[in-house]
Length: 187
Image (cartoon, rainbow, N blue to C red; front, side):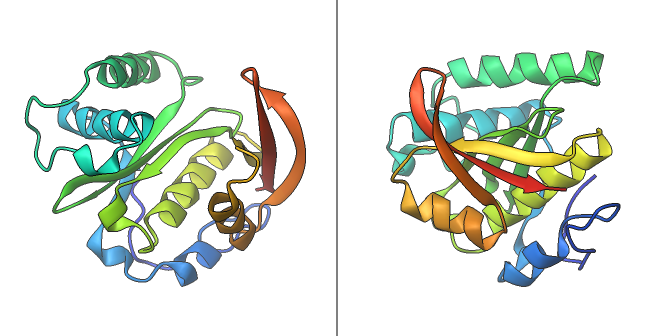
C-alpha cells in the first residue's frame, strides 16, 4: 500500500494513523511511500544506509550505478526475501521521487521502527513523517498496538521530530549495548 498526498484519518484506535502527519507534510505529491519490492528500490535504500553509517550523506549515488557498499544491500535483500516468505518479517518502507529512493525505514511486526533515514536534499519536506505514517499503518494492519523506536540520548532534532508526531519520550535504557531513549506512540 502506497501513501500519497491524500488526507487520511487520525491516529485513533481503528483508524488510519496519517491525518496529522499529512497536515505537517509540505508537499507529499513530490514523492510516494511504499514497500521496497524491486532490486533497484532495495539498492537505493541500501545506499541511504551506507551513507548514514559512514556519516557522509553527500556520497549517495545520484543514480543506480554500481557505486556504494553492497553489505546493506545484501541485508535488505535478505529481509525482502524473508518478507516474501513470512508475514512476521520486517517491512522496508521507501520514499521515492524522480531522484529515486530518497528515504527509508524498516518496521517490524510489533511496530518497532529502525533505520529511518532521509536524503539531505529531501529533508524538511515531510518525507520522514510520511514514512512513519506508512510504518504505523502497516503495523496496525499486522496487529501492533503501538509504534516504537529508540533514539540516541541528546539527539534533540530527532526527539523534537517525534514529539511533534505525538510520540511519548520514555526513559533512557540500554538497547543493543548502547544508551537509548525509547519513544512510543499508541496506534
